[in-house]
Amino acid sequence: MPLTQLEKATRFRYLHAGPTFVIPNPWDTLSARLLAGLGFPALATSSAASAAILGKRDGQLSRDEALAHARLIVESTDLPISADLENGFGDSPETVAETIRLAAATGLVGCTIEDTTNNPDHPLYDFNLAVERTVAAAEAARSLPFPFTLTVRTHNLFFPNQTLDETLRRLQAFEKAGADVLFAPGLPDLAAVRTVCSSLKKPFNFMVGIPGKSFSVPELTAAGVRRISLATSLYRAAMTGLLDAARQVLDQGRFAFVDTSASSSELNTLMHI
View 1 (cartoon, helix red, strand yellow):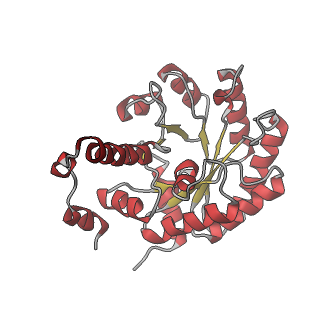
View 2 (tube, one colour):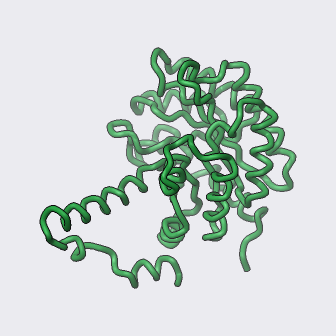
View 3 (cartoon, one colour):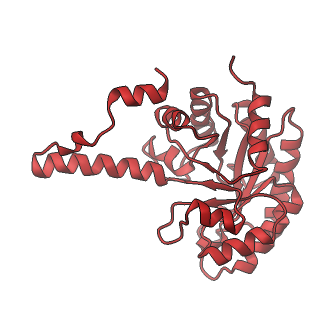
């Protein structure tokens, strides 16, 4: 029997109690089913990868498009699915709350909301508004009939003149406002990761995918990380394989890539078809 949304949500919440787990980011139903077949315990969408398969850049998907894509992932496997829902597709706390409710109606058991505005002249929400948005998201999540896991992330380290102190200030405020998981991509080293994790009571998600700033599971576990997401890294790895094979054909007239490729039977087995 397929798991209910309540059962998926409960499993997802339980994963955050430990030990550290990896939550990979599929970009379509095929990649979702392959990752499920490999044995990962949960999956999460990536806004950038989701946009890319529709021929768009990160940030160009509408809320309807993002949720329709998330529904495809939800329906492709019995695993708990969280979604990268960017800034909640609107500035106001009310819009963010509505996005949470719509996400739950899509079958998701969690999502990530960030504090970026999509305005290059003012890329981060002012502190107080960022906190208000988190409060609204948390209240919407708590109103649901199952434990929806709300992750809130600050992107301040992606912008000039930002500090780790400001990262901590925002994360601690988001934690107090009701976030279940905290997230801050761009941490420069393991010392910073340890500082963040030791400053929080709720689980921290570390994002792998930035060259030179992606650390191993044992290192991140020792630093206190509870969840490790992969952002677009698997999507980029898959596209790198495609480009390498295609260039081999186009530039060399050779097909050596077939000797190391997964077989159709192997892929079908992982997808359980």
